[in-house]
Image (cartoon, rainbow, N blue to C red; front, side):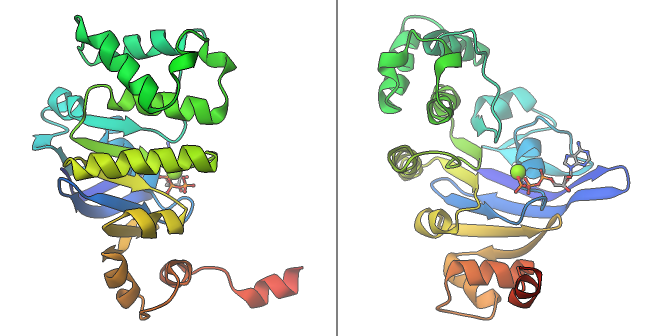
Length: 250
Ligand SMILES: Nc1ncnc2c1ncn2[C@@H]1O[C@H](COP(=O)(O)OP(=O)(O)OP(=O)(O)O)[C@@H](O)[C@H]1O
Ligand SMILES: [Mg+2]
């Protein structure tokens, strides 16, 4: 599970995250939506323990991220929007290195590495340098690394960006299967179809504040509609584009 209580992040006088609360119980895929600059990445980085909150609290699988950072991190898989990978390692070396960071060792480690490489269709690239990988291959390698230690909760920042349809389908299937096994998944995305298709509940953030939270139907109701496409609901909640302005400008 992931539980976020009244989380705040200030940069000087600017409040990037302004009292965000949300919870993702075991087995739920929770969509985290909002326009550019709304505070999604900042929130996810605080959940992952990479950024210190100004105030508020984050719990991951019952561990307070500020008080028990190691236990919290050990039970979380975090996939950042712009992952850092060492280009001069092979895929296999990168994953072994990652396994070491999570304290995985012994005989089973290479089996687990191979299992992940097979799952993400990278096995035949095991001994190739990461620098030769395409964007989609790097993205899948990062997923391998994030899931090596069988996390019970996952926080992921825009996982589908730049993936081809096959890669996107694979990732969706993996997330679904993980959630069926009780993993809690918090996923930021700009692809509303993905959110609608995959997420049991959504949180919509605007200027650091949650403006709507609930199932897709509940969020639609909150926005004052019922059978609208999620895009129009999203734009209504977040003050989207005005056609008249576009008409005048083009
Ligand atoms: N280190 C920083 N110093 C100052 N402001 C920051 C810093 N990091 C983020 N911000 C600001 O915080 C706000 C939220 O940024 P964040 O990256 O969380 O948005 P986001 O919702 O992930 O957007 P996107 O959809 O574009 O990825 C932005 O206005 C951003 O400029
Ligand atoms: Mg972001």
